[in-house]
View 1 (cartoon, rainbow, N blue to C red):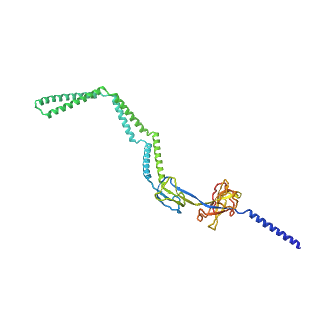
View 2 (cartoon, rainbow, N blue to C red):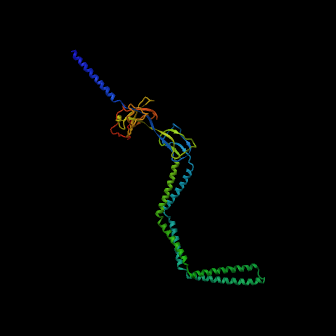
View 3 (cartoon, helix red, strand yellow):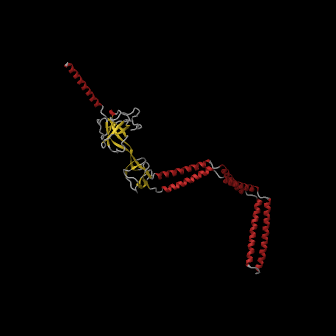
Length: 396
């Protein structure tokens, strides 16, 4: 009886030893993957599209700012005057475009028609020549002028004789001379007037009147039809150009206030009022604390996960673990950087990964050293994409 019991005991011990050996061997083969890295955050370098002299610096290093907060103010110099000029140019261009688009007013059309009718009547009169009654009246005026001239000559001769005998004064003599000269001049005018009427209208007068009538006709037709489409299009283009110039200056004035593009922590400020900054040059930097991540390197033979894999991050300064997610896996392998320690040999090829923190944004800081533990949580969902894609975060 003892011999069979001994056999059973030996068999039981052998089985236990075999199970323990298998367990130890299995545990040695599935050691959890742990890689090291440094917590990082996105750095935003902020500047202005316009350069200038610094008027105010409203933040210091370490200040928390919200999106849109004004951090630095630059001097405007002549931008305000240029904006006023651009506004005036735009208003004038807009008024001109609206005037051309609306066309001429009713009274302007009526005025052009009246001018046309007047010149048309004058041309018809010139073409018809002088009337008989007009010629007869001119002859009568000439006869009257001749009579007046003859009478003035007689008075002049009479006073001249008296003056030579000292029977008349010098004033009387000057008076009759003046009347004689006036009568002679009037006679010449009446003679020329009659000669022109008898000759008829000159051709150059008719041509001039025709030209004036043609211009008046064109103006009347233009006001009836309105302005030409090309004039309206040109006015619209000028208005749009003026609006674009004004908008450009408005954007430059807005750039005088350097604002935070997103919420963050001011990391570096090296400005004082009075400093000159160049256009497009960064003047300060922000750290985006809303998104912390860690860059790490995984050996090729341990790359058995995909983006979306949940992991845990630990840091030396805190005891708790923080949930994170793999959001990037490099498409191309590389050699292990000298400053990264892994359980694998350095000669092996590694792949760069990016692990984004899902919690601990208030407790952790950029620059903290930490470890990424892949054995603490399960594998990624089957729908997660690999090779550099960033899946939607799952709720923690």
